[in-house]
Amino acid sequence: MSQIVGVFSCQQYDKETFQAVTSKSIQLRFFEAALNEQSVSLCDELDAVCVFVNDDLNASVISALADKGVNHIAMRCAGYNNVDTQAAKSHNIAVSRVPAYSPHSVAEHALTLMLTLNRRTHRAYNRVREGNFSLNGLMGFTLHGKTVGVVGTGHIGKAITRILAGFGCNVQCYDPYPDEEIKAIARYVPLPQLVSNSDIITLHCPLTDETRHMIDAHTIKQMKDGVMLINTSRGALIDTAAMIQGLKSRKIGYLGIDVYEQESSLFFADRSMEIIDDDVFERLLTFPNVLITGHQGFFTREAMHEIATTTLKNLSDVANDTLPEANRVV
Ligand code: NAD
Image (cartoon, rainbow, N blue to C red):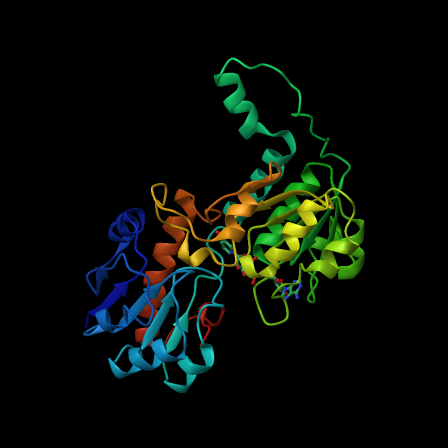
């Protein structure tokens, strides 16, 4: 029997990728809107919803989904901090995710942020196009031999650790569950040691109650002067107000972020003709040593293909009660 699935927060590229791999047993209905309390009314007739990082699956949305007979929330991403999993459990709604679609895509983006911030290629590009060949202000540092702290050595953290070891960096990691394979190329150290010893810190742990604002005024104070901080995980790992103070005091030498705590009202849309009301975000943009991308770490052809095929498989696996444990959240 075919199931009807509403794909929310759907961009043209999502639609094209899903249409290229879908089967007859799954009817996809595409919605540009994010799934939240306002848009849940669109879910009549749906068996499942397919959602992304900024859809809001709070208890009241989940209760409305249950009333409409939706039995599965299929996340087309790895993180699931935007789903009230207790509410899903109590309404007997399955929640699946794509645990590892292309960790290399995000790890390579974290590296892109590091290299761009360091060697200022974004500035050099504009200068050269305008006939300005001055090197003033473009001086970087040699990455080889620098100490890089990797927080979280899951799929993405392991991929970036291998890349950085290949660059000749001294990589130190922190994870409550150390990985045996990584011990061959990097050292595990306690988090405070990682924070105070690293020239570059890159965050690859999930957003949980424990990790929310793990980078706050206290942590920033422990860091090396001029440290580079990279966050491609979730915005709320960083207390943005404290980060702005860290940038103003020159403690933070470079900040590269692909995620932002309040990104749900900004990212994944063209807002170039809008007035942006978020003064904190606008303040971040004024620093010459801050580089922000709009949550594009996952955005490679290979990762998109893997996300679509795994999500569709999760949809049929939940229907057939054969979902692998690694893909199950609830
Ligand atoms: P993963 O589950 O494979 O790994 C997460 C690791 O973090 C695990 O090893 C876990 O033990 C560790 N961890 C848990 N709590 C920790 C803590 N307090 N301190 C340090 N480590 C801790 O996840 P992943 O696939 O590597 O993804 C990591 C994060 O990247 C996801 O949670 C998601 O938020 C983010 N992500 C971002 C993008 C993007 O496009 N920017 C894409 C995919 C994933």
